[in-house]
Amino acid sequence: MTEVPVIDLVHAEQDPSALVPLDLACRDHGFFLLENHGIDEVIDEMWQASATFFDLPQAEKRKILRSDSIPLGFYDRELTKRKRDLKEVFDYMLSREDRTDLNQWPADQLEFRQAMEKFFIQASDIAERTLQLVYRALNRQVGQETGCPPGDPRTSNVRLNYYPLSDPLSGAEAGAVAGLGDMALHHHTDPGILTLLLQDMTGGLQALSKTEGWIDVTPKAGTIVVNLGDAMQVWTNDNYRAAVHRVIPMAQTARYSTPYFYNPRNDAVLEPIAGLTQGAPRFSSFTWRDYIKGRVDDNFTDLGEDDIQIDKFRIAI
Image (cartoon, rainbow, N blue to C red; front, side):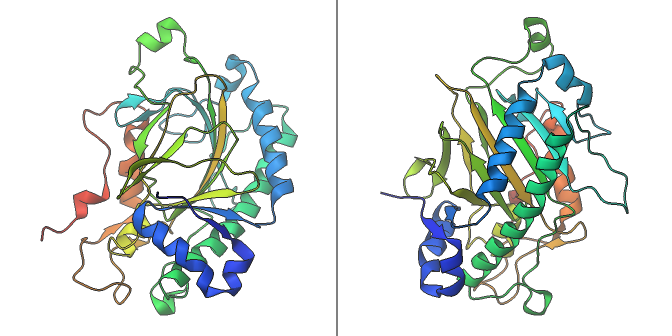
């Protein structure tokens, strides 16, 4: 039976043999669990702040509704695979002095913002350490000199997810947008390098295994779920797999989760890394900037076709 392995972060950084189950998982379904990460207190603060935010009245949350021009903030009608997901989200990024800050924070919720910014900083560090583990499993080291691209917290983002038991939209609102599908979150891959996912103990997350079909990613207290993204699959020339995953509808208890999406630099080129894998390149080159734009364009409106996927750049053999 295919399982999602539990990797001790500190132990794996010291003992290469601990990376064997990580390597096998990355080749089959792209998921593993990370323990001994050392940020439990920060995660607890994030959970408390997240629950407080989603408990706000709908009208209050919609004061910071995201849009085409301001892609961060609250949203309750996002599409995946042209179907509306049964969830509410709040997105934010690292605030920077060298660019316009697109973050929208709820009014009079200073503790919320502080908890989220603290979590972002700590998650960025864990993401970089985790990326190094993945590269070590491929017998590579992070850095330009070895050809293994780093991630960039400046392009990365955090999302708070809330999966309610019923549609957050009223009847009239629901009738004006795309209909709900049969999943709380429809099957997809994440576009970036890797995702750190915090999930509560409700369950519902499933991964697509190459050998066994859909398998449960069962919650385990104290762990962070890690799944690989499209950039990693392209860089490794299909050796490591972008995790196809979904969330089944909640039957009895609402679900909360928080992914940190660790992304490439804006000017990064996505193409198989020479020397990282054997065989001819399976993907042509494309840029992260163009790819992520194509992935998010249809989050707001059904554009009549599925969002862009890495198979668009696959070289016919």
